[in-house]
Length: 176
Image (cartoon, rainbow, N blue to C red; front, side):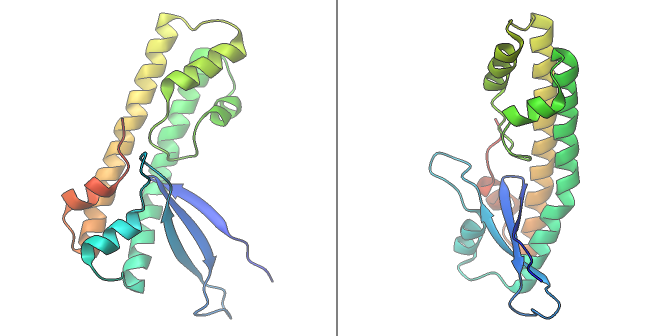
């Protein structure tokens, strides 16, 4: 039986789940945690945490961190689904088409202007000021939710690693 790799993006962190070499008989999954570039220079949350700790993370810490990140997944998906539904309702463009215009799930910095431009191109007309305001409100609400999720993530990662909440928060992607 072959187990394929699966990727999941949570709060700007890409989790690549691979079969564990520790216990191949049960094909348990062990996370290899990477981050997607979140700034112009790029960012690697796990490397930043390791550098700050000045020691490797234990397997237990990695497992706990994965658990924390997975806990927040549903909240992020819900926030983005709410945004998609609102933009779909406001514009009349199907959610499935709008999601194709957006960055991957849980990528916090949706470029609203680019999304609006793409929707207007698809519709062949400019959106009204009321439509633009509704999209702005939905975008703000989604970003506020993402900020709350990042705060929770920073707090929980602080407990796991012993780093301060502020130090962890500074390592996370900036939400604009």
